Image 1: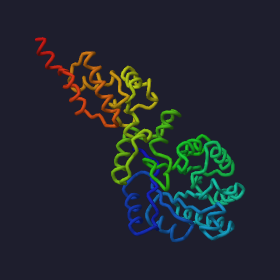
Image 2: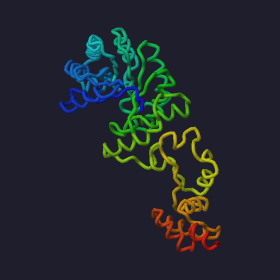
Image 3: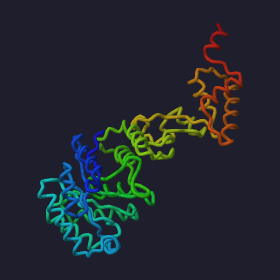
Image 4: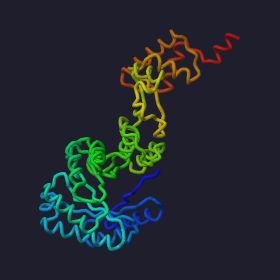
Length: 347
Protein backbone atom coordinates (compact mmCIF):
# COMPACT_ATOMS: atom_id res chain seq x y z
CA UNK A 1 0.00 0.00 0.00
CA UNK A 2 3.01 2.28 0.23
CA UNK A 3 3.21 2.49 4.03
CA UNK A 4 6.47 4.26 4.86
CA UNK A 5 7.56 2.46 8.03
CA UNK A 6 6.34 -0.72 9.70
CA UNK A 7 7.10 -0.78 13.42
CA UNK A 8 7.05 -4.55 13.57
CA UNK A 9 7.42 -5.26 17.26
CA UNK A 10 9.63 -5.58 20.33
CA UNK A 11 12.39 -8.09 19.40
CA UNK A 12 13.65 -8.63 22.96
CA UNK A 13 10.16 -9.51 24.19
CA UNK A 14 10.33 -13.20 23.26
CA UNK A 15 11.83 -15.61 20.77
CA UNK A 16 8.56 -15.62 18.85
CA UNK A 17 8.45 -11.84 18.60
CA UNK A 18 12.12 -11.67 17.59
CA UNK A 19 11.41 -14.13 14.78
CA UNK A 20 8.32 -12.20 13.72
CA UNK A 21 10.23 -8.91 13.50
CA UNK A 22 13.10 -10.63 11.69
CA UNK A 23 10.72 -12.24 9.18
CA UNK A 24 8.90 -8.97 8.51
CA UNK A 25 12.20 -7.11 8.05
CA UNK A 26 13.37 -9.67 5.50
CA UNK A 27 10.05 -9.81 3.64
CA UNK A 28 9.36 -6.19 2.76
CA UNK A 29 11.08 -3.30 1.00
CA UNK A 30 9.34 -0.90 3.40
CA UNK A 31 11.55 0.40 6.23
CA UNK A 32 11.10 -1.90 9.23
CA UNK A 33 11.49 -0.65 12.77
CA UNK A 34 12.12 -2.53 16.02
CA UNK A 35 11.32 -1.24 19.51
CA UNK A 36 13.89 -1.19 22.32
CA UNK A 37 14.09 0.22 25.80
CA UNK A 38 17.28 2.10 26.69
CA UNK A 39 18.78 -1.24 27.75
CA UNK A 40 21.73 -2.95 26.06
CA UNK A 41 20.00 -6.31 25.54
CA UNK A 42 17.00 -4.56 23.93
CA UNK A 43 19.21 -2.61 21.55
CA UNK A 44 21.19 -5.72 20.59
CA UNK A 45 18.04 -7.77 19.98
CA UNK A 46 16.62 -5.05 17.73
CA UNK A 47 19.86 -4.78 15.77
CA UNK A 48 20.15 -8.57 15.45
CA UNK A 49 16.62 -8.77 14.02
CA UNK A 50 17.78 -6.97 10.89
CA UNK A 51 15.57 -3.89 11.06
CA UNK A 52 16.63 -0.69 9.30
CA UNK A 53 15.44 1.49 12.18
CA UNK A 54 15.61 1.08 15.96
CA UNK A 55 13.11 2.99 18.08
CA UNK A 56 14.49 3.32 21.59
CA UNK A 57 12.50 4.92 24.37
CA UNK A 58 12.68 5.91 28.03
CA UNK A 59 10.24 7.44 30.49
CA UNK A 60 10.71 11.17 31.08
CA UNK A 61 7.71 12.10 33.25
CA UNK A 62 8.53 12.19 36.95
CA UNK A 63 5.74 9.77 37.85
CA UNK A 64 7.10 7.13 35.46
CA UNK A 65 10.76 7.81 36.28
CA UNK A 66 10.13 7.41 40.01
CA UNK A 67 7.39 4.78 40.17
CA UNK A 68 7.98 2.70 37.03
CA UNK A 69 11.71 2.97 36.30
CA UNK A 70 12.83 3.71 39.90
CA UNK A 71 15.56 5.92 38.46
CA UNK A 72 16.62 9.59 38.43
CA UNK A 73 16.48 12.25 35.75
CA UNK A 74 20.27 12.12 35.33
CA UNK A 75 20.12 8.37 34.75
CA UNK A 76 17.38 8.85 32.17
CA UNK A 77 19.50 11.28 30.16
CA UNK A 78 22.58 9.06 30.40
CA UNK A 79 20.75 5.93 29.24
CA UNK A 80 19.06 7.80 26.42
CA UNK A 81 22.35 9.16 25.10
CA UNK A 82 24.16 5.83 25.38
CA UNK A 83 21.36 3.97 23.59
CA UNK A 84 21.26 6.44 20.71
CA UNK A 85 25.05 6.23 20.40
CA UNK A 86 24.88 2.41 20.28
CA UNK A 87 22.28 2.41 17.49
CA UNK A 88 24.15 5.03 15.50
CA UNK A 89 27.42 3.08 15.87
CA UNK A 90 25.70 0.16 14.11
CA UNK A 91 24.92 2.46 11.17
CA UNK A 92 21.16 2.01 11.67
CA UNK A 93 18.57 4.79 11.66
CA UNK A 94 17.73 5.77 15.24
CA UNK A 95 14.43 7.07 16.57
CA UNK A 96 14.21 8.17 20.20
CA UNK A 97 11.08 8.67 22.32
CA UNK A 98 10.79 10.55 25.62
CA UNK A 99 7.91 8.37 26.85
CA UNK A 100 4.99 10.21 28.47
CA UNK A 101 6.23 13.45 26.92
CA UNK A 102 2.90 15.22 27.40
CA UNK A 103 3.14 14.73 31.19
CA UNK A 104 6.85 15.59 31.37
CA UNK A 105 8.28 18.76 32.89
CA UNK A 106 8.87 20.95 29.83
CA UNK A 107 12.36 22.10 30.77
CA UNK A 108 13.49 18.51 31.36
CA UNK A 109 11.89 17.36 28.12
CA UNK A 110 13.94 19.93 26.21
CA UNK A 111 17.09 18.84 28.08
CA UNK A 112 16.56 15.23 26.96
CA UNK A 113 15.82 16.26 23.37
CA UNK A 114 18.93 18.42 23.16
CA UNK A 115 21.06 15.65 24.66
CA UNK A 116 20.05 13.02 22.07
CA UNK A 117 20.28 15.60 19.30
CA UNK A 118 23.93 16.22 20.19
CA UNK A 119 24.77 12.55 19.61
CA UNK A 120 23.11 12.44 16.20
CA UNK A 121 19.65 10.96 16.68
CA UNK A 122 17.79 10.79 13.34
CA UNK A 123 14.22 10.95 14.57
CA UNK A 124 12.59 12.17 17.78
CA UNK A 125 9.17 10.76 18.47
CA UNK A 126 6.92 12.74 20.80
CA UNK A 127 4.40 10.35 22.39
CA UNK A 128 1.17 11.29 24.10
CA UNK A 129 1.49 8.04 26.01
CA UNK A 130 -1.55 8.45 28.24
CA UNK A 131 -3.71 10.31 25.74
CA UNK A 132 -3.97 13.54 27.73
CA UNK A 133 -3.03 16.05 25.02
CA UNK A 134 -5.40 18.37 23.21
CA UNK A 135 -4.72 19.50 19.64
CA UNK A 136 -3.87 23.08 20.61
CA UNK A 137 -1.53 22.05 23.41
CA UNK A 138 0.08 19.27 21.36
CA UNK A 139 0.69 21.60 18.43
CA UNK A 140 2.45 24.09 20.73
CA UNK A 141 4.59 21.29 22.18
CA UNK A 142 5.70 20.06 18.76
CA UNK A 143 6.54 23.60 17.66
CA UNK A 144 8.76 23.99 20.75
CA UNK A 145 10.45 20.63 20.19
CA UNK A 146 11.17 21.53 16.55
CA UNK A 147 12.90 24.67 17.75
CA UNK A 148 15.35 22.64 19.88
CA UNK A 149 16.47 19.91 17.47
CA UNK A 150 17.45 19.36 13.88
CA UNK A 151 16.22 15.75 14.01
CA UNK A 152 13.06 14.87 12.15
CA UNK A 153 9.94 14.75 14.31
CA UNK A 154 7.46 11.90 14.61
CA UNK A 155 4.31 11.83 16.77
CA UNK A 156 2.57 8.99 18.62
CA UNK A 157 -0.90 9.66 20.02
CA UNK A 158 -3.38 7.68 22.12
CA UNK A 159 -7.17 7.82 21.98
CA UNK A 160 -8.18 7.93 25.65
CA UNK A 161 -10.28 11.05 25.02
CA UNK A 162 -11.01 10.35 21.36
CA UNK A 163 -8.41 12.90 20.24
CA UNK A 164 -5.65 10.67 18.85
CA UNK A 165 -6.13 11.44 15.16
CA UNK A 166 -6.79 15.12 15.84
CA UNK A 167 -3.62 15.34 17.92
CA UNK A 168 -1.58 13.54 15.25
CA UNK A 169 -2.81 16.02 12.64
CA UNK A 170 -2.02 18.91 14.97
CA UNK A 171 1.51 17.54 15.27
CA UNK A 172 1.90 17.49 11.50
CA UNK A 173 0.59 21.06 11.28
CA UNK A 174 3.23 22.07 13.83
CA UNK A 175 6.12 20.66 11.79
CA UNK A 176 6.26 16.92 12.48
CA UNK A 177 7.21 14.83 9.44
CA UNK A 178 5.50 11.60 10.40
CA UNK A 179 2.81 10.08 12.60
CA UNK A 180 2.64 6.62 14.11
CA UNK A 181 -0.79 5.15 13.42
CA UNK A 182 -2.48 1.75 13.65
CA UNK A 183 -5.09 0.09 11.48
CA UNK A 184 -8.58 0.25 13.04
CA UNK A 185 -7.07 2.27 15.94
CA UNK A 186 -5.93 -0.96 17.63
CA UNK A 187 -3.54 -0.20 20.48
CA UNK A 188 -3.06 0.03 24.23
CA UNK A 189 -6.19 0.95 26.20
CA UNK A 190 -8.50 2.96 23.89
CA UNK A 191 -6.03 2.61 21.02
CA UNK A 192 -3.88 4.84 18.83
CA UNK A 193 -4.50 7.27 16.01
CA UNK A 194 -6.21 5.34 13.22
CA UNK A 195 -4.27 4.62 10.04
CA UNK A 196 -7.40 5.02 7.92
CA UNK A 197 -8.52 8.26 9.56
CA UNK A 198 -5.11 9.92 9.47
CA UNK A 199 -4.32 8.96 5.87
CA UNK A 200 -7.71 10.06 4.53
CA UNK A 201 -7.64 13.32 6.50
CA UNK A 202 -4.25 14.19 5.04
CA UNK A 203 -5.34 13.13 1.54
CA UNK A 204 -8.84 14.65 1.53
CA UNK A 205 -8.88 17.52 4.01
CA UNK A 206 -5.29 18.72 3.61
CA UNK A 207 -5.19 17.76 -0.09
CA UNK A 208 -1.72 16.24 0.32
CA UNK A 209 -0.44 13.09 -1.36
CA UNK A 210 0.64 10.55 1.27
CA UNK A 211 1.89 8.01 -1.25
CA UNK A 212 -0.54 5.47 0.24
CA UNK A 213 -2.77 3.39 -2.04
CA UNK A 214 -5.99 4.48 -0.36
CA UNK A 215 -8.16 2.19 -2.50
CA UNK A 216 -7.00 -0.76 -0.37
CA UNK A 217 -7.76 0.79 3.02
CA UNK A 218 -11.05 -1.08 3.46
CA UNK A 219 -9.39 -4.35 2.43
CA UNK A 220 -6.56 -3.76 4.91
CA UNK A 221 -9.02 -2.94 7.68
CA UNK A 222 -10.94 -6.16 7.06
CA UNK A 223 -7.75 -8.24 7.12
CA UNK A 224 -6.71 -6.71 10.46
CA UNK A 225 -10.21 -7.17 11.86
CA UNK A 226 -10.12 -10.85 10.89
CA UNK A 227 -6.57 -11.60 12.09
CA UNK A 228 -6.85 -9.64 15.35
CA UNK A 229 -10.29 -10.91 16.30
CA UNK A 230 -11.24 -7.32 17.20
CA UNK A 231 -14.50 -6.31 15.55
CA UNK A 232 -14.67 -2.91 13.87
CA UNK A 233 -17.65 -0.83 15.08
CA UNK A 234 -20.22 -0.02 12.41
CA UNK A 235 -19.80 3.70 13.05
CA UNK A 236 -16.00 3.62 12.74
CA UNK A 237 -14.92 6.50 10.47
CA UNK A 238 -13.79 5.57 6.94
CA UNK A 239 -13.94 1.76 7.34
CA UNK A 240 -17.05 1.03 9.43
CA UNK A 241 -20.05 -0.60 7.76
CA UNK A 242 -22.03 2.62 8.22
CA UNK A 243 -19.35 5.00 6.93
CA UNK A 244 -21.00 5.28 3.53
CA UNK A 245 -24.47 3.99 4.43
CA UNK A 246 -27.67 6.03 4.38
CA UNK A 247 -31.01 5.25 6.01
CA UNK A 248 -32.65 8.64 6.54
CA UNK A 249 -35.09 9.42 3.75
CA UNK A 250 -33.72 12.95 3.37
CA UNK A 251 -30.12 11.72 3.20
CA UNK A 252 -30.86 8.84 0.85
CA UNK A 253 -32.87 11.02 -1.52
CA UNK A 254 -30.05 13.55 -1.65
CA UNK A 255 -27.35 10.93 -2.18
CA UNK A 256 -29.31 9.28 -4.98
CA UNK A 257 -29.45 12.67 -6.72
CA UNK A 258 -25.86 13.69 -5.90
CA UNK A 259 -23.63 11.84 -3.42
CA UNK A 260 -21.96 15.10 -2.36
CA UNK A 261 -25.18 16.23 -0.67
CA UNK A 262 -24.76 14.02 2.40
CA UNK A 263 -21.19 12.72 2.11
CA UNK A 264 -17.91 14.63 2.59
CA UNK A 265 -17.43 14.93 -1.15
CA UNK A 266 -13.65 15.07 -0.79
CA UNK A 267 -13.76 11.44 0.33
CA UNK A 268 -15.80 8.94 -1.64
CA UNK A 269 -16.31 5.22 -0.96
CA UNK A 270 -14.38 4.45 -4.14
CA UNK A 271 -11.33 6.25 -2.74
CA UNK A 272 -11.07 3.75 0.12
CA UNK A 273 -12.25 0.65 -1.72
CA UNK A 274 -15.73 0.66 -0.17
CA UNK A 275 -19.28 0.82 -1.53
CA UNK A 276 -22.15 3.18 -0.86
CA UNK A 277 -25.20 1.49 0.67
CA UNK A 278 -28.81 2.50 1.16
CA UNK A 279 -29.98 0.97 4.45
CA UNK A 280 -33.61 0.10 5.03
CA UNK A 281 -35.19 0.85 8.41
CA UNK A 282 -37.67 3.04 10.25
CA UNK A 283 -36.17 6.25 8.75
CA UNK A 284 -36.23 4.97 5.17
CA UNK A 285 -37.98 7.07 2.53
CA UNK A 286 -39.58 6.23 -0.79
CA UNK A 287 -36.45 7.12 -2.78
CA UNK A 288 -34.44 4.32 -1.14
CA UNK A 289 -37.24 1.80 -1.52
CA UNK A 290 -37.69 2.66 -5.18
CA UNK A 291 -33.95 2.34 -5.81
CA UNK A 292 -33.68 -1.01 -4.04
CA UNK A 293 -36.79 -2.44 -5.72
CA UNK A 294 -35.43 -1.49 -9.12
CA UNK A 295 -32.11 -3.17 -8.21
CA UNK A 296 -34.07 -6.35 -7.40
CA UNK A 297 -35.83 -6.28 -10.75
CA UNK A 298 -39.22 -4.96 -9.62
CA UNK A 299 -41.24 -2.37 -11.54
CA UNK A 300 -43.32 -0.68 -8.81
CA UNK A 301 -45.89 2.05 -9.26
CA UNK A 302 -45.76 5.11 -7.01
CA UNK A 303 -48.64 3.73 -4.93
CA UNK A 304 -46.87 0.36 -4.53
CA UNK A 305 -43.65 2.12 -3.45
CA UNK A 306 -45.55 3.97 -0.74
CA UNK A 307 -47.11 0.71 0.43
CA UNK A 308 -43.78 -1.10 0.61
CA UNK A 309 -42.19 1.89 2.36
CA UNK A 310 -44.88 1.74 5.07
CA UNK A 311 -44.09 -1.94 5.64
CA UNK A 312 -40.35 -1.20 5.82
CA UNK A 313 -40.87 1.60 8.35
CA UNK A 314 -43.19 -0.47 10.53
CA UNK A 315 -40.81 -3.42 10.54
CA UNK A 316 -37.77 -1.21 11.25
CA UNK A 317 -39.60 0.61 14.06
CA UNK A 318 -39.66 -2.67 15.97
CA UNK A 319 -35.83 -2.50 15.98
CA UNK A 320 -35.62 -5.25 13.46
CA UNK A 321 -33.17 -5.29 10.56
CA UNK A 322 -34.77 -5.04 7.14
CA UNK A 323 -33.00 -7.38 4.75
CA UNK A 324 -33.34 -7.93 1.00
CA UNK A 325 -35.46 -10.99 1.72
CA UNK A 326 -37.84 -8.88 3.79
CA UNK A 327 -38.04 -6.26 1.04
CA UNK A 328 -38.90 -8.90 -1.55
CA UNK A 329 -41.60 -10.28 0.73
CA UNK A 330 -43.05 -6.80 1.32
CA UNK A 331 -43.04 -6.18 -2.45
CA UNK A 332 -44.91 -9.41 -3.15
CA UNK A 333 -47.43 -8.65 -0.38
CA UNK A 334 -48.04 -5.27 -1.99
CA UNK A 335 -48.56 -6.91 -5.36
CA UNK A 336 -45.48 -5.41 -6.99
CA UNK A 337 -44.63 -7.10 -10.27
CA UNK A 338 -41.14 -7.78 -11.51
CA UNK A 339 -39.98 -5.91 -14.58
CA UNK A 340 -40.27 -8.98 -16.83
CA UNK A 341 -43.78 -9.74 -15.58
CA UNK A 342 -44.99 -6.20 -16.28
CA UNK A 343 -43.42 -6.28 -19.75
CA UNK A 344 -45.13 -9.60 -20.50
CA UNK A 345 -48.50 -8.18 -19.50
CA UNK A 346 -47.96 -5.19 -21.78
CA UNK A 347 -46.94 -7.48 -24.64
